[in-house]
Length: 235
Image 1: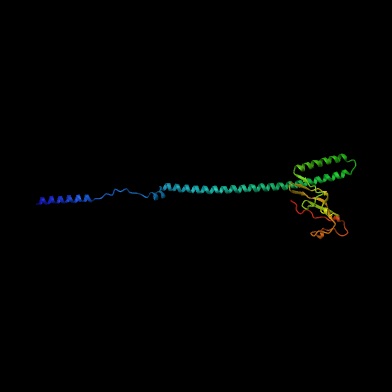
Image 2: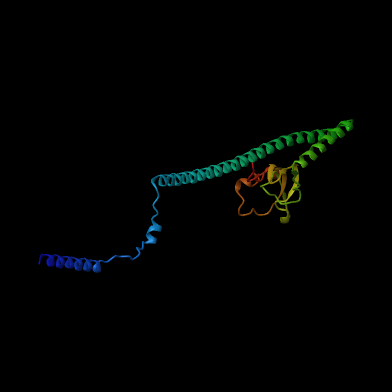
């Protein structure tokens, strides 16, 4: 009896084990990972992260230094342009002043020639002074100095200064330049010296824009009434 019960127990245990083995489940499905999230958030070792941060900081500093260098170069170029422009202006002013001084020497030579022309026996000296004057005129012309020929033209106060007037009955000759007592000169567009001229003035009714001080005084010589001088002169 006891042996039968043991065999029955073993057979029962065998059935339980076979049933447990029959109901055991093994999950062999592949595990899928989110590749998108893994790619968007790469993870590096701490050393790589530190090197990456240092590289980005170095690139940022390099961009800032490059921008600062470009600003310095632009400011330096603008300073060079201003310096060159100022130097050209100073040179032009000095050149104009020098030409005006030379014109004074030319006036002295003209006066010497005028005196020598009325002195007998001064032919040789007069010829020498005339040659010097002509040579000086050639030098001035090579520097861009040009004389003004205003006789027969209308009076322009921008380039001429009226030292006397002469009345005329012909209205067409009003403000006409009759004579130059001193020649004017230009250096390019710069007025070196205005011409000193005698101007014709129509003796009829005064023009509406004529000022009282421009009219000749009563009982005086109308040639002593001077017209306005140059309105503007580049210094």
